[in-house]
Length: 306
Image (tube, rainbow, N blue to C red; front, side, top):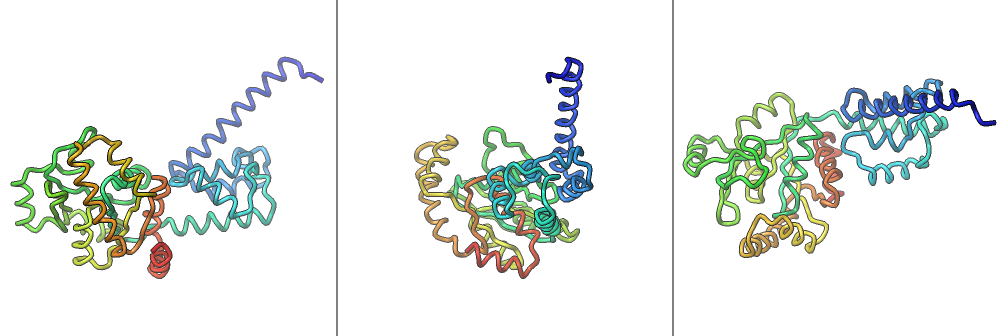
């Protein structure tokens, strides 16, 4: 039988309220106001109408910061959970499997104090990956480099780089304020201010340095406990496409940078870990994961990725 108009209106209103409640759960998880495990356990309390219970597992996992749809699909496949499954509709065994996975991820998500150095060839996406980490992982201190080059469109002094004169850069070298410094592409100088890094590590925070190959070598020599990560392009053709596509250099500079990139790629085996930048969010999560692994696991991860 067709329900009377008043019933249809009430049903529509209830459906809207349910969608909003589920959206609020996802938003709270995305903003780290509650954990995905807490939301899942709330959905297993017996109330089948609770927003956590009616939320699809896929939606819950996608709301976790740093996990995109592609990665979620792989995770659910490995856990043996169908794409259509709702949190409250999982059986006892599947609840245990999902609960264990979420518990392990949360335990791993408690950052250790660790210095991670991210380097790689020109146009590989180091800046994009580090920006993603800055925006989605505020617990990680992203070191800001000083440079003598001019800002590119959209770059902000003190946010992306400290843009300084050659004279100011010379002063920082004299006063030993730089952890490392180098001349890149035979033109501009880049350096990493050391005081903020030492202060953050002393407080137990993890620090990410996005620097060039020469700088990474200097950091490793001064701080051998640092984890060196080499960011790779999916293919050489993709690297060329990214460099030309961003349109920030003329043809002569592009050619010079591509020649430098070949030299930089040849040094990748000097690094502890290699991460391929297929997808920015996944590459960023791999880098952040290195800050959460216990020392023994971290060494195993390095050997595996290499």
